[in-house]
Image (tube, rainbow over all chains, first blue to last red; front, side, top):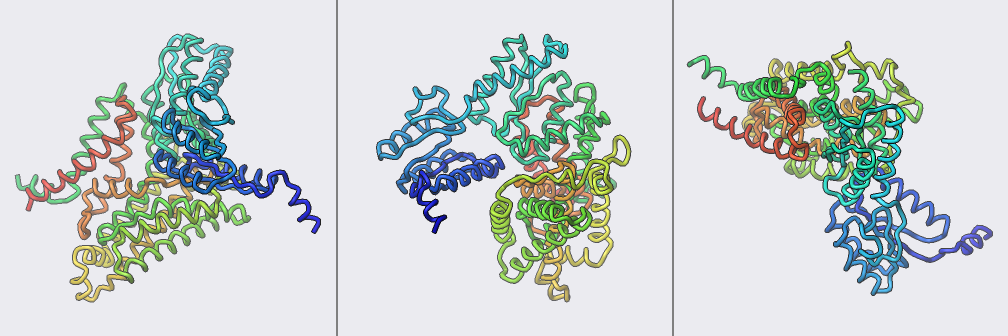
Length: 234
Length: 322
């Protein structure tokens, strides 16, 4: 009885939310889903998460299905600068609040009518990673005149990867680094990723920095450790 | 002339010629001949057997006239079981055998559904590919699991599955060779191999000869399952982790390797030498092209093209030597 009274007192009791993402097999979204469920449990509301396996058309369908269910709010990954303009406007016109999470339109509120955005700025994230890495390298005395930056991406052409790479390039410019290449990291299957990156590093011994553009630390960390161990051992 | 004709009468001969050509071309044309650099060979040797071992089993199954698309899900499923067992305090060796057993059971399920319902294995295993991945996602919640504390670097099990024989020969290559030899003996020097070829070539005729074709197919599915279990443990130990994305895309890469090795999609034709070379060829193309500084985004296009060209070449040689 006491616990019921407590449950009734939760601030979002009776509300229902949807989280529409572009994610799929990616362990990153397993962590996000767990966080969403924990938050819903804490606040007393319900939440469902939609995954689309990086299929933009499917993600749009998932948003349309979510809107049809008339939830109290939708959190949407805005991973394309144009594809989400009209669907978001339509959802808002139907009286459903839509916020952006994880990825945003590159023009921010000027590019998409979402009510707000919760997450990092992709360009700034790339810039800050580059800045920190190059600063540390400078302190260690690494010569930047012939430096080459490799940027493996998990999903070639994905908006967030391109924008983040632009941030890295901005940091490169500040340190006078001119050589870089965005490469197909081979997706999310770990052996393929490791094979691709090992071959690339052997073929490009001039590579001074490798900045993997991924949202999946659960994949990139074991691969990174294995890759580093391998390169050290060989 | 007769010797040339005799050489090309072996189905895997074209694969051998192309394989040797690729090795020579990459050895000559990669900058500083880095393709034959021991560092590159060691890196290749450590990584390609994950897929290569599964491709050996898929090849045997294809000769038997069936496909298994579920390997892309059976591998991470076995990896998950392996990690779960160790978290539950079982030793890595016990967990390893449980993982092999689970692989065998999943192969048995594929085999039973296929032979009892007469459903094409392409459909059966497409279904189980999605089914087991779905079960895995629900069960594991797609959360990665570290197993490094259970199999630390330098431990006996780590050395057995992901160590080095010497500075440049990883044990994964030895395992790949061992499985290739075992399956080669089974396929070419054992009565069971004859049953596999007969079943794949003409099931009705094989059945009329008294061969229990259903049992032969089920055993071949189980061989693939066990090899998936083995590869799962090997990969997990190397990475020190389970991830739900392990094995994604392995099903088509394994079939490509077998096709490149001269295995017929219609069953009854193929050899372990060809499958062995096919399993080596795909990673070599991938590796060699990157080393030649071909834009990495184009690699998939080259592998796709190579698969088509190999099939055309095999068909051409077959017609010429007939």
